Length: 462
Ligand SMILES: *Cc1c(COP(=O)(O)O)cnc(C)c1O
Image 1 (cartoon, rainbow, N blue to C red):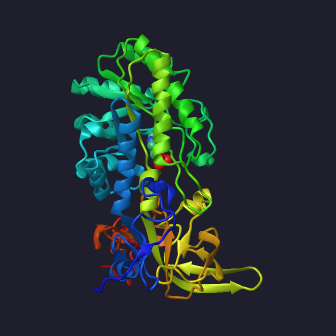
Image 2 (cartoon, rainbow, N blue to C red; image 1 turned 60 degrees about the vertical axis):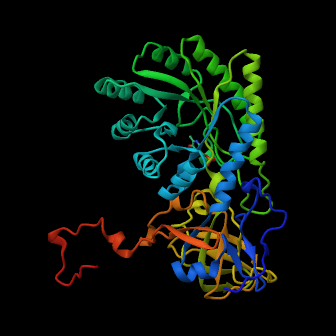
């Protein structure tokens, strides 16, 4: 390889808070206006791994983890632990990477729990969430000694029975809804009164009383999470104050809670006009609010836990597509279709989410075209980007959509029986496959054709 000269893709990049950029920190442009990430040319990755392809930048992932950890060390005088909310992107590689940065994991199912364990995360640094955990999931948590985030009365009864059967204690964080409204999409708001998650603030007293006489339970702390893609700091500040008050009450009732888990929710930049707070500012606000509330109530500082998902992984990721057909409707719109869509990125059709894209092989060309990027699924709503400016786009071009690292691969489906994409982790000129592309055989593996429906002409695939 000749040594191409590079300049950064994005101007004014915030290297300390990756959630504030569109592109991964390592995104760079060479003299031929080709885009590189993690020292890999995107066109080469597409040729080698095919499209659609999820590309994850290791530098950005590590920078995000370090931003949280360093800010906590700087702004919070007590102990702290960052738990990565693994539903944002779940894979063995991501679990292992997070653990290597000293993070724990927040998991919501047996599948996510086994992924965390498989990735080498210390079970003491795993918390199990869920508003309807199954017996299997709770037993798995007990077996591995992970902390359970207690969500409801049914679960309390189940845990009591399982712990007594196994003659075991369980470490609990109690989840409650703090009654905080924040400005984000209704589907990803979780802290308001009308939420399916956790106990009502009014119920908390009864739960704490009930557990005060439960030898099987150790109330290790409290948990709340107010929502996702939040750009305001005030709700997080209010939350800290409410939580410390609840902590005081728990102590009055004879518990010895050590942990205060304030959840996640910090937003990221998806389009140029998005301006989320920096990770450092979020941590500083939360830390200051917890310290102030503890001071006011004359309480010792709890261990401060937080659970960022999106802000750790979103802007580390991009999705590479190949452009296919183009449909021009004069005076109305120009559609270009890509070889993926709502199956690999369900966020636009689910939450009307917006994204930004570029042509990685001509990324400095003037944006003289305006196109709507559609997916290939049988839904008119399967549109990834509406009316975006791009250089003239032709069939065969590669298209990169920024900031797809969170809630894309983890929410991917097989709608229209389309195999899910591969994912590669890039760093220092090397690409490592971390999720292989699904095959058509994979898709047919779960189907069973009953004998009486078999046609004489049906041909087994694979
Ligand atoms: C989804 C979720 C998170 C992470 O939210 P982000 O907005 O991705 O940071 C943290 N905690 C809980 C309980 C969650 O459900």
